[in-house]
Length: 271
Length: 304
Image (tube, rainbow over all chains, first blue to last red):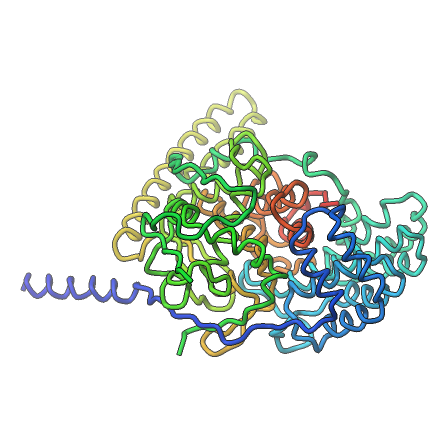
């Protein structure tokens, strides 16, 4: 009798182990996205993704080149940023930075279109409006389209700073877009200069009661917000420490294969 | 046929072309592997273990984010806890991931970009729920008449004792579960951590931003969850994450995963080095999206 109970119990434990074991999955590449853009936009994308200072000579030259080929850049940008485009986020992001850097009123239509009509990126979900999001970390597509709209809004604000009246109107229009981030950033842009107060008042009249707090958000420096005073108190356990961070030669690639793999780390494949 | 597939976006625009040559350095890989708790067996079968420098593969894309977290402060050797998030962010991620010592890659379900599985949900009882509840009751007690307030204080002590006891029982049971049949406490990075689009189970997934700084932000976010802090609020009106649904942080001072993520992105935007203009701009915009969508009570500020 007890032997039977023991066997059944053992079988139940083994079944539980089997059921809870997660199978390792396999993955493979099926395609890559190849950007098809003109040389000046291609050069800008390369530079904006490799230099870290707008005063860098390479960056200044790349922006100059963009300004010298406005029609080509606008044509490429319109195609890449259209609803039908399958361009991924990062390429759109760099393209919008290019349009913003040009500070050319001719870019306003494209920038306004992206800022005022954030569209989910491919692969798109069915339906005109996205449904409830099951998991907070799964709202990636909406997050990405909002980031792009904010990129565009930065470009619009720069034009408004240059005195472009149509750009200022676009900022007002952006305050009624159904997006907290776009609304808040547009309202902050309108609040940034005293001479824009009539526009701000007009915009505020359209903001729903429940979202009025968005107009209270202020642009501040990171030093001005509450920091984490001591992250150690937020560690899960005792501080473990670890090996010293390897030194780098200021971002330069290290020589491959200078040491053997250790601690089960993968080896660098030669060749 | 692979369980999931991906499309590789332009590696220049995602930042991978910038960081890729930097991670392809055996001393860095030897250091990053144990300090971030990589689990070897979960990085085989196409995930990149056998081709660690290939930025088209998931492992290199993950290491790119770890390189960014490690070296983006000008004086990266200074990762003192008393500095700012740009300095201690990478150290915090390493400490937390090493605590679980089981970093995995997996197809996922096309929803979450990363999941943290373990006892952080039960540990939080002792770490903050009991303490917060205790302090709240004590505050309430101070409003009572002095003749009766001792009853209230006694109640607070008993409640705190029961809560703490429950916390220990929950942690013990949870640790036993994950240590035996529960598959271990781990952080699993899904396909959508590495790529903006792909297929899982034959269905198209994605549409997001998975550039290097977005991946780094996710690692900070998940690390904070390991640090015993679940989301404790509902998303605000108009949130892209689903207004009224759970998953938000109550406010900035709660110092939860969203706050940690924003703080890192913000510092990276303001002072990040060895990176690019495009990466920093992406950080700024993502921080503003989170600030306006992921806190029940608005923090009241924006990244300029």
